[in-house]
Length: 187
Image (cartoon, rainbow, N blue to C red):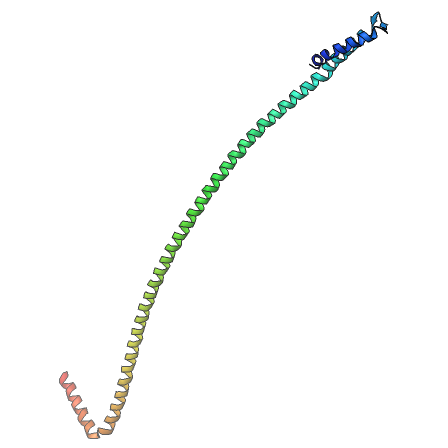
């Protein structure tokens, strides 16, 4: 490849050298020196082509294939990143919807619990009022009974005192006889 590029440029240079060298022509093995120089140049370019250009071209091809492979890998990675990004967006949206649903459920459950607690508190207050009323009635009845007993005791004591002051011995005998007669009659 390099030889094909350099050869057209080398021919006019070689002809120019040949023309100048003909005046001072020196020969090696019977061949003029400029021809030896041209042959030497062609041989050098051929060796250069096979020794340097082919390995360099192979290295460039290998490097180009590596770059293309990296490009394909980068494209795969970009597609994977895009897929993961899309998946993350979907998951985030789903989580946000779930959070909103949980928030709504929490609010509804909170309202329901508040209403249930309020109802239970009203029922408990009603029950306490009823029990308190019943307790008040029991204590009032007990207090009335105590009052009656105290009034009866006071009345009895007052009557006993009055009777003991007003009833004479004769009245007692009369009561005793009447009581005994009634008992006999009731048998």
